[in-house]
Length: 162
Image (cartoon, rainbow, N blue to C red; front, side, top):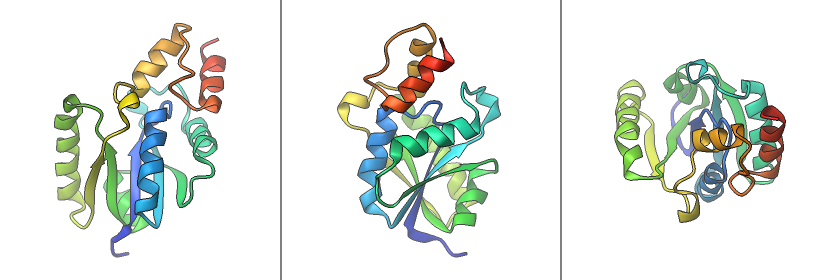
């Protein structure tokens, strides 16, 4: 299937999905005919939520955003992008510190799937310091992260770390 520049894939572990992720989805969705939020299994990271739980939370948190669908994947991202016929890989950059890693990923993806371009977006300033790992760590110790995640994600975090 040829790459379609009107289809974008936003890959991540999303453990958990944060308001920064939601902000990027809300701003990217109008740019494409289809935006596929792609939840990676990624067992190497030892996620707090299972793949199915993360997919379900993302679907609930992103419900109502036109043109957005949530799909899990367990294969190489390049293969997944090619399977969908996507022409764009969307990535978020919070700070300069993210750039080196994201540049390496983009370069590898360009090698593996040259028909797809990587597009970087930055979150709104109020979400620029938020990461899933920071949210998870604070929640694990009973901290209130309700201002950084969708209410359904906050409830799941409270249940997980009760």
